[in-house]
Length: 250
Ligand SMILES: Nc1ncnc2c1ncn2[C@@H]1O[C@H](COP(=O)(O)OP(=O)(O)OP(=O)(O)O)[C@@H](O)[C@H]1O
Image (cartoon, rainbow, N blue to C red; front, side, top):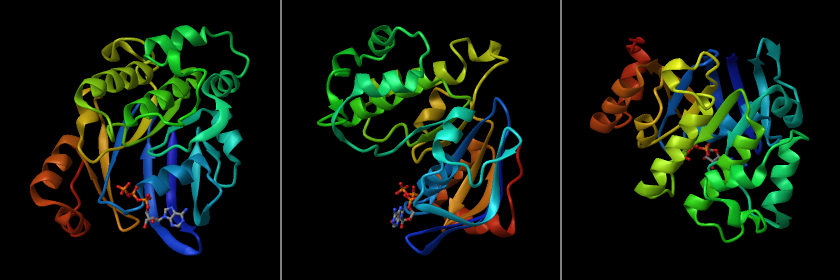
């Protein structure tokens, strides 16, 4: 569904991503690990098409189509949706107005959808202004529920979320990705590329594979639980070991 080939990306005139290649198949959940500043969010922003991330060379294919140069709105229409790590505050624009636009004319009960994620009382507030960390995540999730994309880019869904709210965030993500069915019986399961440091999201979501990104380059891929275990015990030394001795998928 998503295929990235030998991608080189610059931001603010500085090389950031180098030789990045990865694939996420239809219905697959893929995890992206990596130390702070490795370029994980930059990769998600590049896939979404944010204009300050300049592709120097390489290709991004989505649903078989070359989207490397496609504008962000076209990517969204094709079915890519993002939960940002730090979405902007938009003073003067109500969350309700944004989700109505995101609904794109679909007849949806927005109040009910907001209620399901405890966001109804936020619909008439300015977007993200004064929202707590957990409220920002739920706001992002409400917008994704309305968009219902085929491909989810999730940037650290756990960050700033307390353990109780994490259950709500994790279960909502699971419901969205499994298309409101039991995940074991969801042939139309959506695809996802998920950044996590702690791996907490893996308590809610079965992941198929993981990549480790270090210093703007994919160092290895492997079984998500096994890679997380290695990172927790050895830090990102694993990145270096991986480069000479890649871990195979199990
Ligand atoms: N718009 C920008 N202008 C200049 N530099 C940027 C911009 N966006 C990202 N960077 C830089 O690119 C590098 C990678 O940032 P990125 O946010 O992708 O890292 P990350 O792997 O997601 O890190 P973390 O785990 O800390 O969130 C950082 O050094 C960051 O300062």
